[in-house]
Image 1 (cartoon, rainbow, N blue to C red):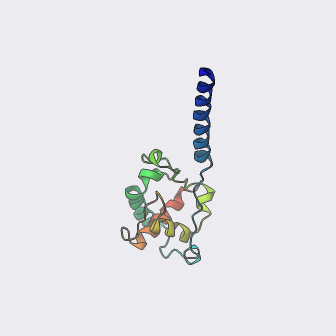
Image 2: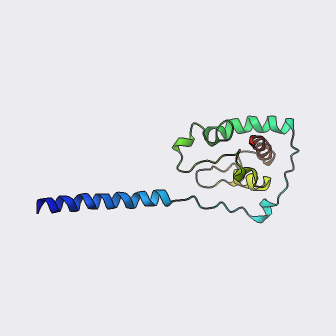
Image 3: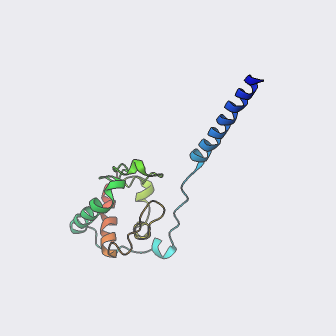
Length: 136
């Protein structure tokens, strides 16, 4: 009788643990839907050295702690995040429009803070231009 109670207790703990693990493993971040007006938005800031320099300074101050110095998602705060902050050098990022990235930076979602009211739109566009330099 004592052995069967112990077995049942161990089995119950194992089932509970596996159930929690399945929620963690299967939990995928929801897709980030960008409104059409932003997806097709054209970047008004010319790409070039001046924009990249301004974007690098802003990125270093506001983004690198999570996204890493070279955009690989390996910043010092990244390991504290629930979701991977993304790899800006990968095709998944680079194939998005500038408007996609502008929207995501301006309005944020979940662990990604919004920069609306913190950074001017021109500054966000400079960051977008700079992040394009991470392309592999």
